Length: 430
Image (cartoon, rainbow, N blue to C red):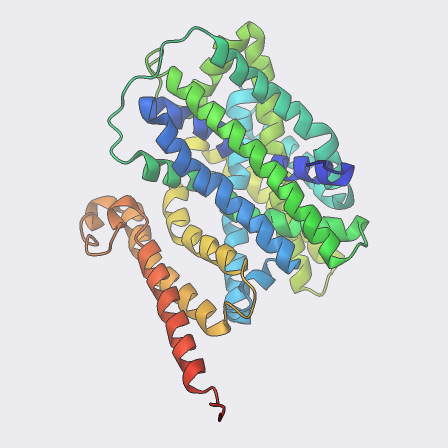
């Protein structure tokens, strides 16, 4: 398949907006802990960190509206609350984490500069990009992403051709589920509905083409970005698994630093610094821009609301980023246990036409998702007090107790609709 220049630029931009701090530090350490189970954790990780985000881009390609449009079928008020919660999570967790990772891995080892100063400069630049949002896709797709891919591919290829012993066994009991839940930490399902909205608005600013043309462009560009993410993740997980018997590290950032040094030598850490800065910065730009777009839409496309929101989002990133990577990841676990299932369900529902998924189905599935996400949230929040209390829910031990109730609700709702329509259809006389 041949891709147009616009598709390539947009695809690279989507990749860079997705590929942030978590996408960089999580896969190698996941492979490191999985050992010989690297393939199975890769499957789980790629479901939540590639497939679901890709479906999110497809959903936006079909709807071609803001994030509000993804949840409006449940109820307009619910849609506003849901979007506000998602954007709140985005600017308080993955956004600040990008600055923390950049400081710990790319700034602190080389420069005598405080975390506060580093974050202020970092988010100042992100704010500058957000305020010039019509050029965001072009800048990311043409310049930043190719450099990012080049460095990542170099690290992976050198490690693959190095004479390292094969991965050893691990004590991971459920590698697929472990990979799935670790993929939550990339925030990419949330990123998909944030980034999808950014892409739609950015394309509308520079591309007056029809709905179908932009839909095809987004689907092709999203597929290209998804393929890139898939290959990079599998490569990084496999490389991480090879280092399980080589090192004794407990930190995700330490493993990545060691891996880059071992593959690229003394210059590897400098390249890693560039890699970290690029990966984190592009995601920060997407988060700040997406949040500002959302608030701007609530206030009748007010440019003042856009500028104010972008400024506040950048300021929060500076302040919360001072807590450090480990703390932000720990806080994110319960938050993601609650919000992620609903994000996934809304993405999937929006892939179908309005004829297939009615308002009734939409509302029923959304309500059941929220209800059955609460036990996973409580366990993640305080595992010692709630451990073992929800074993009656299938798959709750794996942190995905919402899946079966949601599937049953969907089937039940469709069955009711089918029999109701059948019973109310007038019979024709022969």
